Length: 199
Image 1 (cartoon, rainbow, N blue to C red):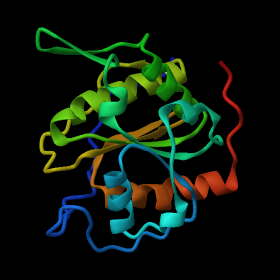
Image 2: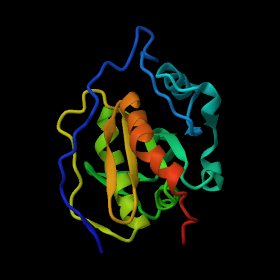
Image 3: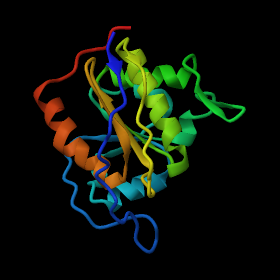
Image 4: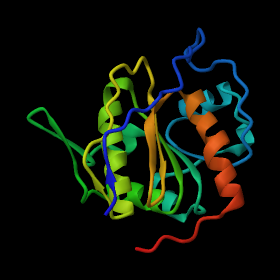
């Protein structure tokens, strides 16, 4: 088994993330891969607001995710998957690893998808915990500790991508999350297509 120990992550995004209408901000994000969105039209507007070509954005249902191509870029609104996935028992947050959404996320991680979960700053630690455990399940690894950032400052998009040796995880602004996609994940996917996951 591989152990993920406590690690200090640099969060690359303390930039302003909104305009007067709270939806978009100026930047240049040049992606050329489809973005599968499970969420509201507001999330689509935010993607367009950061410079994503609207023709690349594809709204899908949660049930359609397993049928997407391996190595997909997926953005999910946390309220869609959190019921039943995260349980608060007496102030202690636990992840239900038997939940259907937990198994779905673990399957996406295993097949090489880049996952961005949109929640809010208060939910970020629970989202990181769930994603780290999903990575652990996907690659049969063990986790000793996961990083919980001290200052979130409105970073409400939690990214997760990894393989059987490493996990990239952490809260970011939407712009910073898409930069990671563009600079790290997309070049890997273009050069080396992932294979079908084994169950």
